[in-house]
Amino acid sequence: MGRALVDVRVLQREYLLAISRAMTAELELPEVLRLILKSAVELVAGRAGIVALQDDQEEQLRVAAVYGIPTTLVEEFYPLLTELPPLEGAEQEAELTRRLRQAAASVDLGLTRMIRLPMVMGEQVVGVIYVFLAGQGTGYYIREDAIALLRAFAEQAAIAVRNARLYQQIYQEKQRMDAIVEQSADGVMILDPDLRIKEFNKALSLMTGWRPEEAVGRYHKEIFAWQKLRTDMDLETARASGWPFPGAAHLYVEGDLQRLYDEHDPMAVGGMVSLGITYAPLMDENGRMTDIIAGVRDLTRYREEEELQKTFISVVSHELKTPVSIIKGYAGTLRRQDANWSPEIVEESLTVIEEEADNLTNLIDSLLEVSRLQAGNFNLEISDDVMLPRIVKRVVQRFQTQTDDHTFAIHFPEDFPPIWGDERRLTQVMNNLISNAIKYSPEGGEVVIRGEVHPRHVTISVRDSGLGISEQDQHKIFQKFSRLDNALSRKTEGTGLGLYLTKAIIEAHNGRIWFHNNPDGPGTTFTFSLPRDE
Image (tube, rainbow, N blue to C red):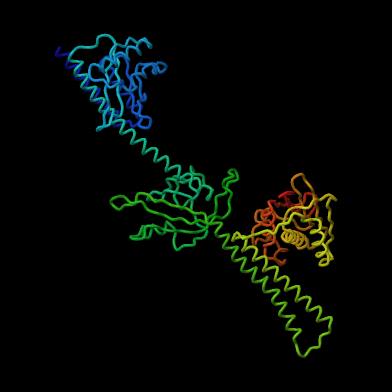
């Protein structure tokens, strides 16, 4: 008997060591519970076992680990997991035995007895271990020692559940933070103290053209080789100077970067990108920097707006100065006391003054329209009987007197319907489109205006015989203050507001506008559509 007791205690010690090692090395709860359950069943020469954990949300036990029971038969043991009636001691044991025998009869595993061990953490029951035995069991000493050890297993299992759940919470929080970083609209990057990249999110990949798997592991300066630095120093210079400095932990760097170009990767499109990066150091309890968190903002559009503002100032000052200078010159000439101007010269001079005053008024009106658009105060004066053919004829008649190099052709079907819209604004649209057709066809040629009727909308197209629009300029054709980058546009007066306002007017009418270079000849065709009904 003494030898058997010694062997059992050695076996118990081995099981406890195995459980302790597993709990130290393994944080996956199902694996820890499976090992605890297997050890518990083998320790008492049992046949099978179940671990059920408390589901706090539904306030019931759920199977978390199974040993010795086919998965298809586990549900037969569910009555053991349901809430017991208010019984005590032998009565509760009898009720559990009855439920076990009922389950055992269904599965035919020869189970006759059960050991039920609550897993308690503090005052909270986190689950229950069930060990099922067959036959009459083992001897007195083994059974008493085994029961004590099983209780220790239950305590260990409760600790394992707590640790695994804490691990799961940390893991889920890490996944959540990873998802936030990855899905952030701003670029996010994590560097080690040697400025080697550890994390590189999708938004930053789109900004720089570097794929995350290619950027991670590289040094910061390999990715951020600034073409133009707009701040006093970059990150490498700051680190060499002792950054992070006391009282000034954050570092802001701004500059222009050459976006990576790869002909095999459509994501890496090349070109320049303006970036602003805020670097924030992470310090440990000893004041040593462990990581650098970098937030990256794409400033390209902001820089483009800056350039547009500069263009605006340059263009508007020129466009305002020209008519004002002409008006002043003609008015000063007419006021000369030493000249006796003929009525014809006076009439001609006054006509020029009137035309330039109209040009000045149109420019001011365009600027006011842009201001209203940006302020959200762009309103339409609507009527339901706007006749587009009549508007086109009136605009063409006016332009016909201003050019001898262009001819005009107007094609509208007889049944072209009246539409819902603002006649003054739509006249402005036709003025802009026909004016551009003339302006960008310096060699002359035919300007064709065509109207078509469709079931739910009408379309108007204006075709010229000019230079066409290069592919590099097509994306910005409807932007404010945008003009074609060619020798002709540099000689041609204009603010770059006409097509911007035209698009805004069409879209305010619930229509759309587009263009294409003519496939069967020189020039461009602009087309817009408007709904037939409100």
